[in-house]
Length: 245
Image (cartoon, rainbow, N blue to C red; front, side, top):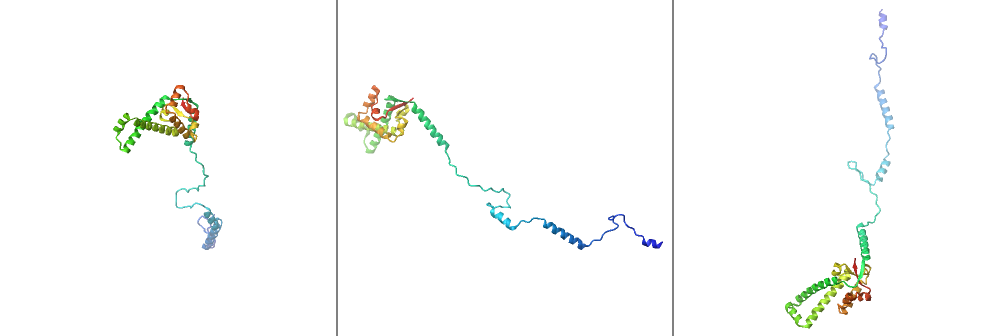
């Protein structure tokens, strides 16, 4: 009976129930871990240093890895585009249209009595300004000058010459630069067409017309134009008056 007891041994039905454990060597576990680590590191791809250096040098912009702001994209140089000022183009087109419309409605006339009266008043006012300037410059007594002008013919002729000179200067300046005097502008009258006023010789024609009227007695040619309806100055110089209608 004792012999049976000595040969009897309890064994678990399956391994792993806690009755039996396999003893493993610590050295074998360490070697297995090292082998697994080497296999894992061999499968991780590593970038070559030369590739990274080439990529960094090819970038045009400086990359700041610490900044949270979005990177600015490099701007490609754009082709220069000519600037067209639309306002000037539109304004020039409007001026051309208005000038054409106005020229289509220009009617030739021989004389404008209302414009002449207006310009005569303007010339008289300018003559007074010139006379005051002359009195101040020469330190002359204005009262004595006016009294002498009523008594002596020479003084009257001098004042008349001053008035005619100022009037012709006023007419030449306004017509040469604006194409019409203030009286003509007020009553829609102008000297010459728009094409005539754009010519380089237009100021010379205005001056010649003024000299011709002055030589013929200032009022003779305008009076003939008023009575007979014929502008002889326009026939001589091919530059006549027009009314815009």
